[in-house]
Length: 130
Image 1 (cartoon, rainbow, N blue to C red):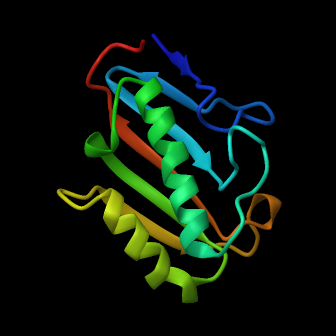
Image 2 (cartoon, rainbow, N blue to C red; image 1 turned 45 degrees about the horizontal axis):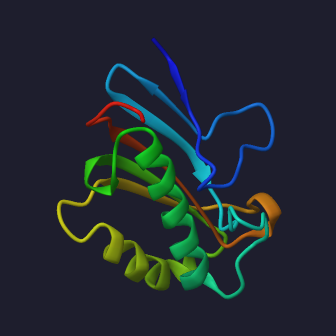
């Protein structure tokens, strides 16, 4: 049965979508942008700071779904400027240092709230939601 996943430790969904949906042992996370869940504001700084916040948001949703970064199967990274790929990739590599997931990275003409990066992912659920 489809389970809706949400946590206060990541930005709330704004609109008709969920932070994540779990189905049959797999969780599908909506794209996260660099919003601080405590304030609802965009984080200060450039691509590195934004990538850290995005990955921390994904981590929080994964934990709420009964998963973690080690069980991410696939990510899609959306960048405002592919010229920032190296800086994003350096931060990304810190979060996925061993057995990294499959990934696609694309440049997008415009992202929500004009952020520099958005990341979505699919992961295996390894424990009950709690």
